[in-house]
Amino acid sequence: MGSSLSLAERHEWWGKWWTPDKPDEKFGGLAVYDPARGITLRLTGGFDYRVFDEPAPGVKSYSGQTRDFPVVLGSVGSTLITLLDCMVSSSSGPLFDGDRTDQTLISAMLLQGCHLLSADDAAFIAVSVSIENLPRWTQESSITGRISIPEGGSQEQPSATYEIGPTEDKEAHFGGNRFVLSHSYSIPHLRATKTRHEAILHEEPSLKVEFPALVSVDKALAPVGQLRDLVTLAIGQPCGTIKQSLLLPPDPDGYPEKHPYATHRRAIQVLAPQSYQAKPDSEPVPDHEVLFTLKDIPFADVVPRWLEVHSRFRAAANILLGLQYNSEQYLETRTISAVAAAESFHRALGLRPPIPNEEFAALLRALLDATPKQHRSLVRDRLQRNEPSLKARLLDLVNRLDTQVADRLVPDRETWAKLARDSRNNLAHEGSAESHDLNRLYAVTEVTAAVVMVNLLQELGVPNEKIASKITENRTLSGAARLGRENLQGPEQGNRS
Figure (cartoon, rainbow, N blue to C red):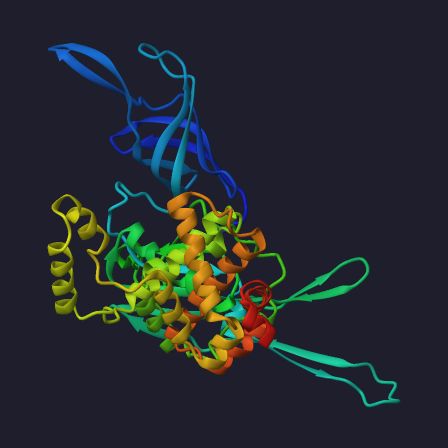
């Protein structure tokens, strides 16, 4: 096993396993991390997972219930393993008396390199993560090169020189945490085969979050999802987590004086099932499709801005990015989700109500006074909120965009808003979208999601001219604009175009 474990690859650990409350009761077994199937632990023997009642003193009765195991510990040679949030999926052997013959548990997370007695233990000082397409977003590399091509007619061979060296770390600060973008690289390696010589070198950017105090596993990993979502938004396509590790604080007492590891923060590899599987060896996103890079907004600015935007528009951002991470949902589900993201984003803007609250309260009282008593509760329920209509919310979202951006993305705003409203209402309230053909329903979904995406980009501070250009260059935004032109224009707007 290498020192850095990829979430995209399968890993195995054969060793001894036990629970913290019974450290002397160990069982041999195989733990497996599979990107598609998650984490399983197959034991020879197994833990007692039955829950017993005591109906009378000294009398035990099996309740029929079972218990889970918050922590299972393991040792694989000198390597320490912690499995978190484990449950028994199968177990064979006698139910009441005798030992189990084998048992399989499912775990939510595996930590390689340490033992925790509880998932709530505040043990970690930082987290480091590698994310797909990060090189495209950073637009920076530790590798520099120069190629010399002889002028026409020369018999000389072209020559090239490549160098690799350190790049300056970039940092940002938010909420007391320090965010660091750094590059690691390999020393160039020369390899000879039977037919040729090869020079191999590589570098890899990563993101690290350093905390002001020790935190638990969940709190340490929370920023990983936020950073992955930022890269996904910037790239315009879903980006998965490739590697992640938690860092323990230095342990100077555990090493001799002046030992190099005395100030070293030991990395704990973290493996957990991912909702979106990274494909690190696939082709990267083309540069022209990237929505924005660190050349557009510096790292020191974009990280705190994103964390503020994500906090304010959390539900809308999560729904929108969820549509990207899980693109295989039913069309009807995607439609409802896209419109819900738009509505949630508009609510988070905190705009003034359509009618001053005092006038709305007076109007409601007048309506209730004029309504027969047996119907007043119905009227009150229908008019309890002083809020804009869904169509008005949708129009607000597109009207607040730069004119050039809005016109390219939604050429007929009224038709789009009306169809989006009707599609959502028919699906949510009538359980059917039969009044809309599938092409139009698909167009409503893609355009609505694109409107929310562009609003997020605008809140993040991406320049309007950059957004406008990406409506032509980016596959998702250009596709949405095309669908809008083809399917979401009324007769008058269609003739005009």
